[in-house]
Image 1 (cartoon, rainbow, N blue to C red):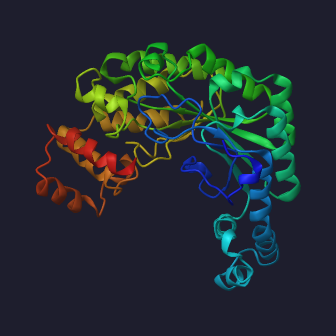
Image 2: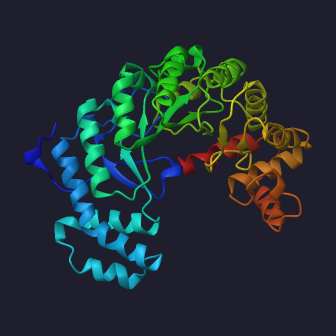
Image 3: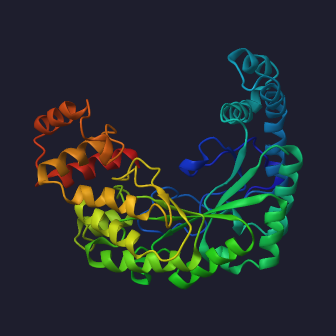
Length: 384
């Protein structure tokens, strides 16, 4: 583990949620403290470590050197131009280029939010995290949202008092990878959490007054646990009532344990049609909640299945039912067009100028209703 005297400059980790694309990324810890999930390729082979608070504060100061003048430009002119960026760049020291680039990226996103990296920032000692949050808010008082990934297991062990103090210090949204509410599925993929733990962690976040995003992974139960996955996940989320439910369809990269399980027959991957049926059952089974559903990822078959419960439930379910009612060739065309990025959703398929391209692709690669899922699996690995 590095110490403060070994500070090597501004750091950023490898990932953040899609909804945090415009956020400033501040690295509080490195990699993932659990790192055993069989479906996740991100941190394999990497060691977890906590960054010293002094190093995190130096990162904040390094970005602030360039972010503050850029924010001044935004306040004055409503945006930053190339010439504005070049004017600030003139003062960049050689060892601060990454901090400058982070400030520029943040300025292009209007400088409204900060995301704490990496996979589970709340594992940091509460007093240390509160210190970082308070310092960040003092340096960037205009940032209205500070967010982080967290594991349910970690949140469940933090006192309500500490969570409330984190919220008071500025941490106002938590992203939790629930993936599933089924204990059978969670055990199978070595998630390190249980349904009860997910519920407890999620309820604690809500009780602290923070927004909560819970991620669900359609297909994670495979064919064996598909129904249990849908029903138990819906039940867990009904008990939590998170602000956001975000869908992330399962894809299986080649360097994961789940890939080996799949290839050796221990895991049976469901088809797109089966995944649609699973998602429909999941949506129909969610209880009396007020969550917003987001499908903001290229891996998702239905990126337009979004809305708020309860008022948009039927519209969301209707889009999936429309897909399931298609004939096999129509389904194939939609699957291929969606995964090529040509269709955003069911509504974008009819009368689309891209249909000829989809049909040509199917002919070129000999895609049929019988082999379309095999081809889709290969396409999806490109986006992991």
